[in-house]
Length: 299
Ligand SMILES: Nc1nc2c(ncn2[C@@H]2O[C@H](COP(=O)(O)OP(=O)(O)O)[C@@H](O)[C@H]2O)c(=O)[nH]1
Ligand SMILES: [Mg+2]
Image (cartoon, rainbow, N blue to C red):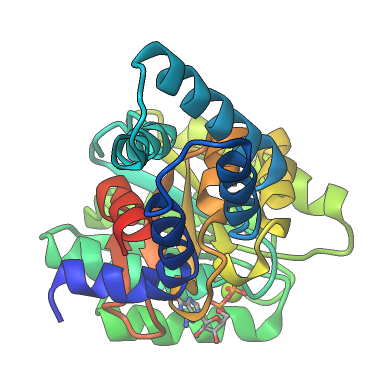
């Protein structure tokens, strides 16, 4: 499957749920109050969220007034551009050495995404090192080792219960010695409590800042698309502890709740960078606002 069809396939459930209803609405003709009510309920039912739905509708009405739009065709292209603008963030290009820390709650797909990213960077010609920063669960480092082997990259790990920041410290020293230019850091999704988890993430951040000043730093949060609106509060929680630069949205292939991307963009102003399109090592794609919005509006 080509890149575009793979993303499109992953968005299909979400797109089908929205685009069919939208297109039915847009063939209606008149821009009545019922039109806006129906549009509102379509957006709300697609996990776009109340706040972002309101702001989309407001911008749409504004443009319709300003441009004297009368036909539903023009409304459709106006909606397209509003939804696109919402997702169209300025994302800085990677610079190397690059350190990516992957955070997120349990089971969202952090470890799997690290395996996929390791494979992706390696294919691009980079030397990758994985740091097993989830020291909370015994099986975490073993699972990560399997991914490191699949991707054919090195992993730095310690025993269960070790200090995650010390694993990261080791990884940085090791990468400097062996010449890896990409470090991917796995982290725990759960500790004894939330405060501990956030403190641990902050500590890992400080260790990187102190010991790898010349590296570009990126923090991604992994979100499970099937959780819908819950994903928004996860972004807000993690963003309080560490600066979140972007989102890896996993399991998009299994859900019609992909509309949550708009809610996150609208409420948290964090861009989606990658989407997970399945469970295999190649099942990760760079997020494309064009393809996403186009699929949702045009099907
Ligand atoms: N369908 C699908 N499953 C995924 C994706 N990413 C991860 N998973 C599955 O989600 C489960 C949890 O993943 P894991 O990486 O262990 O999550 P972690 O606890 O955040 O490290 C595993 O069964 C993965 O195969 C994805 O993009 N699509
Ligand atoms: Mg994990």
